[in-house]
Length: 199
Image 1 (spheres, helix red, strand yellow):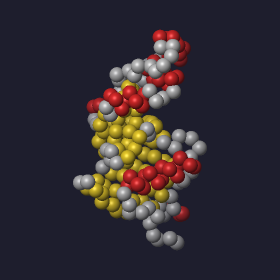
Image 2 (image 1 turned 120 degrees about the horizontal axis):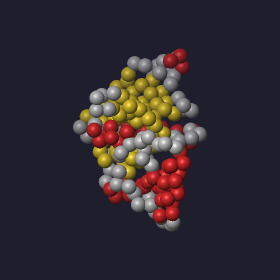
Image 3 (image 1 turned 120 degrees about the vertical axis):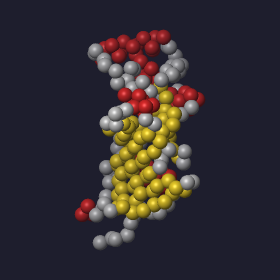
Image 4 (image 1 turned 180 degrees about the horizontal axis):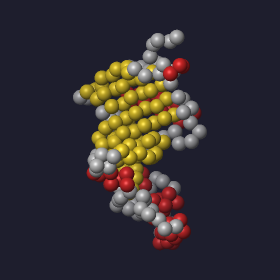
């Protein structure tokens, strides 16, 4: 039985990059998918999947409609938690910390890097609002496509991005007989402290 941790005491961003690269090579779909947990103003938890669109020492970035349920919850409480679960690798990473909104220039750049049809779909959507029937949404999509027959679609002001600046990052690795391996990194000034956790 291996009684040594397989999760190294390294910079957590470097370790994330290593694991993320391995996930991109092994996961069949959306290796950048992550669960995003927010809370309502009354403290009730709220959870959904989003896609990671940028990461590094500054944090972990995703984009959304700020008028959606998640956007409203974020603006009311600028804290969140992320969870990556890579089933093919039997690994997960939990990340917690405060959020900040990205600049308009960063939101513009990412919005216009998306396929044109995705730009139209986002601009036409009142995300999370009631929809009488799908035909109504597709009518909006067609109207925008006619209004802007070529080139980029203007980014709606409410379509933006948020960056989570991690205060805690926990790496979890499946081990035989449920004797799992966990290491928690906690922000300490400009650096990190770390400890193993019981599974």
